[in-house]
Amino acid sequence: MKFDIPRFKTPWKISLEDHYQTPATLEFAAKYATGSREAWQRLSSNLLDFTKQRLEQMDQTGVELAILSLAPGTENIYDKRRSIEVARRSNDAVADAMRKNPDRFLSFAALPLQDPEEAIKELARCVKELGFVGALISGFSQIGEEDTSYYLDIPMFRQFWAEVEKLDVPVYLHPREPLLSQQKPYEGHPWLLGAAWAFGVETATHALRLIGSGLFDQYPGLRIILGHLGEGLPFSIWRFEHRNELDPRGMNLKKKASVYFYENFYVTTSGNFRTQALINTILEMGADRILYSTDYPYESMVECEEWFRTVDISLEDQIKIGRLNTRKLLKLETRLAKLPKAA
Ligand code: ZN
Image (cartoon, rainbow, N blue to C red; front, side, top):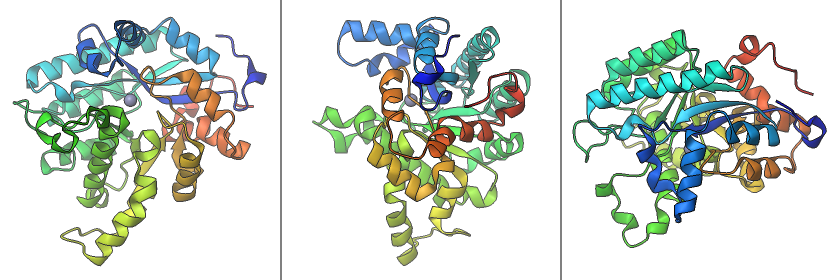
């Protein structure tokens, strides 16, 4: 690895939303290729790669370490047994990539939430045996039938969350497309689907379900990471709280809704390279809760780094967001003691 340190205002960064696929799961990503055949070839090659262009771009943009994750993941495999198998095989494949490049890759586990007991076992295996640093879950799970959506706040997942808290690892709540049967508001407007709009609405709603359900009163140690500068929530959490204080409609929490957002959530810069939005997020949550990320290969590492290095915030905050907050959150100090220190 060759870092040209003076090029980077923040010489080393850690990125938490870096996706991969295996040949067995590549089909999930097909609909996210933008347009041409060439675009799909490029995207699929980037998703499958662990040794070449991914590392080259990390070197080029000063990313010392990427936390890899399967996305789209196993949440859309409504056959239970297959979801268990695919999660396990994907985790084994990425564990192999970690072993080959231990100072450049770590991973979030893919989990078969279709069977919460199995998801608990797989997360424990990944964290305790394979050295993973948490899990990435792409939204609701489909179980048994295609037109089903099981959100993570419902009672069947409470034991899962108890184990997550015990293992003391964060969960990255990643977007996914709403079910076809739930896409009525988007009918005739395909440009509203996917990362442009529907992902954010879907994921922000899911995060608010977690807050409103009292999950964090029950398991206060949970830490949830949201991408895309918090899927719009830093901008709208005050209004959510304000309206529910006037009329709680059954929401019964020990703390103000925004406090859970500030205490139990982190957000990353993935796919939202916008200074105004970042500054709003810093004002709302503080710089200690924001983590550098790209959303590679659906977004460009180069575009992300070119934006981040010119962002008009203090160097101290830039270094925190770039790497220090993540080192703390993922307890990387001991694991990465051999890596060079930040400038
Ligand atoms: Zn992503």
